Length: 344
Image 1 (cartoon, rainbow, N blue to C red):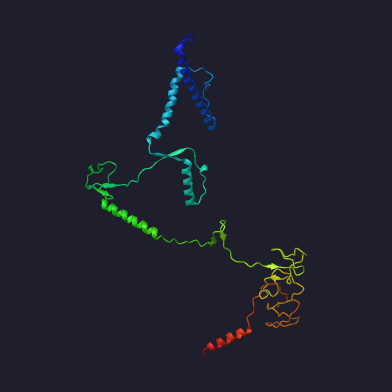
Image 2: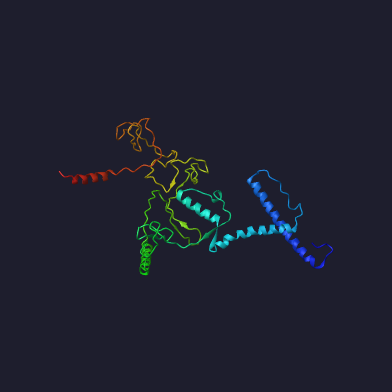
């Protein structure tokens, strides 16, 4: 080694050696840090000899030179897989696991999260290989299938042209005919698509829409509904939808409160949910045969069906929908027509 008193040309090699030693020290520190992290993750291991920090002891340059070459070797080894598979394509593992989880979910109805399944870090190598057909050959002497070798395992016969091949080799004309048939089938399937029956018996709600003229949200078709309005019979205030109390005078909605549009033919006793008004005509029902009394029936009026006189037990009919009774004249005309059809 040169002494410190020497100068001139020896300064450059010293700087070069010091640069190599600093890089090697940095590399050693990085390796030690990674090892400490792995130890902390995996847990405490068996006690062994303590390792001193590389920065605490002076490391000679000559002794660290082989270490640099030793560290460069794993780096070269890591690059070998890329050289062995030049046609390989890197695919993220996350994408592979997501596709696998999606297929399993569609098949078994499961909800799988790839992050909780496998490690999704890094890439995977995929090599695209052409589709190959498996060919079997049989010995024409002993009918034994050939293996990977060209020699029969039974009679030691070397494979020749007389040995049968399955599938048989097609000629160019047969290949062209197969392509034409395949193209014809695909064209027919595209033009006449098969009709798949829908066996789902669950009711489905159809929603008819049409584009908006102003370019906004699509218009949805809805069945026309009649808007009903009820006004108070005392202050003519409009009742709020879903409320039976007048917002102006706190009057409870009764049978005298007008309805727009009115339907007295279906609701002659008042509308459902109304209270009895002062101008409403009371109507009663027989408590024995459930027959309605006429509108002007007083107490003691006989029932038209069971001749029961109206009493205090006969309840008053609440506001409800009433089906209109058939016209007696129409019933008589129908009975006359039926009597003419009878054959004596």
